[in-house]
Image 1 (spheres, rainbow, N blue to C red):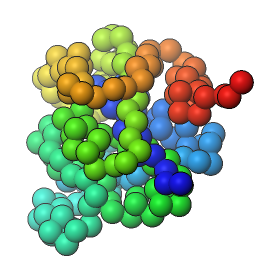
Image 2: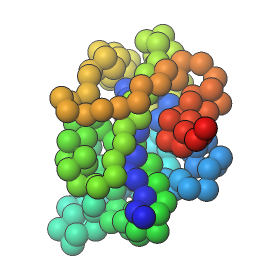
Image 3: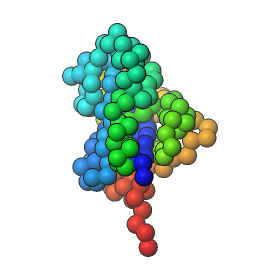
Amino acid sequence: MSGRFVAVVGPSGVGKDSVMQAMADRDPRIVLARRVITRPSNAGNEEFDGVTVVEFQSLKDAGAFMLSWEAHGLHYAIPIAAKTHLKDGRDVLANLSRAVLIRAQDRFARFDVINLTADRDVLAARLTARGRETETQIAGRLERATAGLPSGIEATHLDNSGPLEQTVRAALDCLYPVKA
């Protein structure tokens, strides 16, 4: 049986990468897709492979990505290597943009979405703490925080305003419900 591709989405600062890492640490059925992004590798507090726009386009042209998109003036991609994990029956979690969900849903036979939310004040504090954006950029991200999912996308909605462990437990329970 093939694994699932699980898109984790939500506004900037909601804690997608923290939730995903904690899920992978707790459950061996999960592997994280390491994104390729056109920004310096030392920017921010997330694990990704930073490349230039020219390098990104070269990789894309060579078929190195199973999914790619643009958001916030940057290029993002999920490397083709994630297919190996899916074929091996592992579930691949990927931090995706809401705008690419329809393409992702069409691309993967087994596809789920976890939509993380958080209170506006929590988002603002997290965005400020990570130190990646200006105040104007943070304000823009907060305005986009309430954007909905594309029509036709079903998702599990989880509030990540509280303790990380609470969200991780809820997410794992949704992906792997206990059979009575």
